[in-house]
Length: 93
Image 1: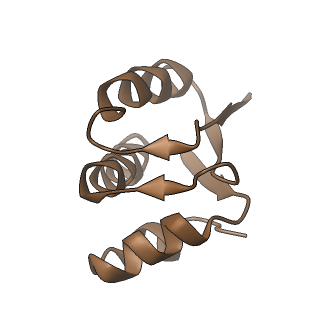
Image 2: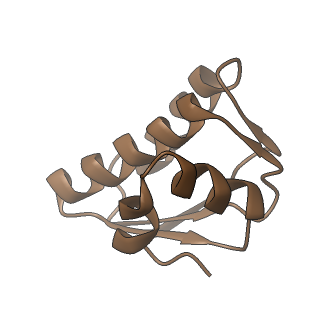
């Protein structure tokens, strides 16, 4: 079963715990998770690290993970932090 979750527009340090809980609940028991990042307008280091942790957790569990939607804020944050592996390991379209 594919679980789909849409992120709120801001993924910054003050938002990370709420987003982490939502993402982990969606991922619990899922074989596949699709995360819609199209609404993201602000992403800081903490937000990018959360997504990297999700990628690593998905790999550990053998869960298929896809980031869908286009977010210039996310792409910029990942590139500036050298976390291109988040977009390289998942579909970012």
